[in-house]
Image (cartoon, rainbow, N blue to C red; front, side, top):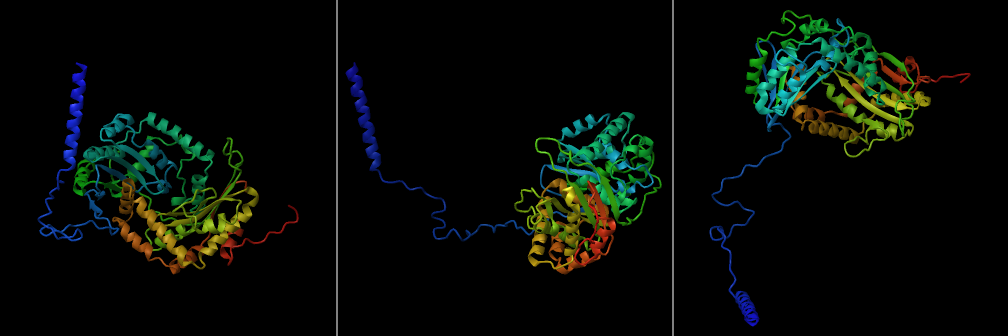
Length: 525
């Protein structure tokens, strides 16, 4: 039996090898291509006859969707920019903020920011609002600045009508209950404490420089609620403010990622003929004051030696911010000032650097690279509809404050000197790059559309702004700098200010040819 099995196996192996040898000597097979006989002599670089000519996408830096604006019967503007995708960003921007609080208790805008998306006429709690948004994959946010309040939601486009209705309810039908007000008081108190304790002093210095530049008017009013006003702000105070500033003619419903007609229909359904929670629209008494630049100094003596506790504490630093009046974002000089700010650049001594971080800007090359003891030198440009402020913020050891201030004043004077062609082109390219990269984000496009339409009733598209930036010349930089240096400085100082020069000496340095502080002679140190 075993012999039979062995014989069978040998037979099978033999037949398999015979089959393989047969395959080895068989004639090779050729694959018949469908196009082989039809177009035998046409190279791959030439189009096939009878085939429609292809249409390829082109990249010219211009948006293919225009920004459309419609004004409703009640004065509210609806602005939108279409964009491919399943999600959209929509929100209401209001011409309201801390600059309009001269006749009211300071801090109302801060309170309204914290009260946003609380209970309304249709929604009993904030949780109910968030659950409604979650059904459409939505998130919400509210931000206030000195001149604008913004309520925004990002959600699936299928829930657009629900989202616009929710936004209308949040803005016009807030309950502002005693319980919500008490929770907001706690939140505001915590934020004020955090503002004074955080190692990064930039938000506090920004408050101080505005207070110094616009003494007790418009954008110089406190953006954060003063401690003494926390207990005083109640529903009655808030309603008095809302009655004058939350009006349709001061609002823009902006959206990105939807058809304009659809957004207009939603606005007409939810924002026309609505009775607000504070009674009626009526005649308004809005503050139309124009910002008055005053210049001046605001000082805050503080022990900064224990700001950051831990294994690697931050060394004790004194922070100085010096600013000069620039221009509003509605003026033609706004673009040259933006280029100048980018050219100054700067940052922290320990910045990682890299492409786009500004390691070749003036404040890096002339200040941080040459003065190892300086921890920070950064340029900022704040711009509003009627004024602007160009500032330089610097930080150093308290014993070197005087030298640090002189370095800042010298840099301001050098702004009006020769502008190298390479550094100007680099600054313009970096500004255009930053603009275009930021506008890749849908929420940023939304904010750009809303703010521009709120201020000018129209929108300049990115390629228009890039064209304006490209046209800036060195003469433009010199002209705007010369105009800026004729004004009085605004100074904010925080920390150990023992060696801080007087305001008059800083003003004299900015009026001189070289930016040097007047010499001080002392008999005793």
